[in-house]
Length: 138
Image 1 (cartoon, one colour):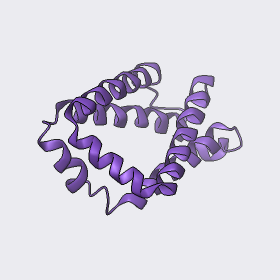
Image 2 (cartoon, helix red, strand yellow):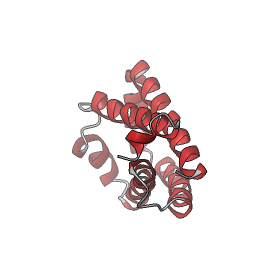
Image 3 (cartoon, helix red, strand yellow):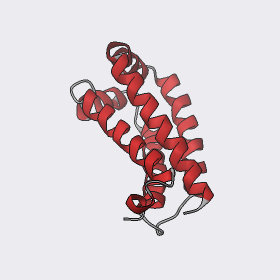
């Protein structure tokens, strides 16, 4: 496994775990923030641009589709982030709230989203630590 994969696995992993824990700790504030955010078209555009830059950096810097599960998961995270950035940038300001709040049922599935983030992060941290080399290569 490359040093880049290990670094990105830990970086993304710790990010996911910490964000998931913050989400669960401050559920009401998180839901309120997301509700307000998707109603604010200029802020959504800025966030879309920032996420696009980060996602492109990840996709261009780590587009690895072999070598075990960990490199592929890191690559998939980049591609999913790129898709999310494009959705944020190209959904109309009228469609964004409906899509993110109603179609994805953010408030109803809040704990599912937090759990997925936490589990993904835990896997990435474990796999990138070297201890999970057998799991990461599975």
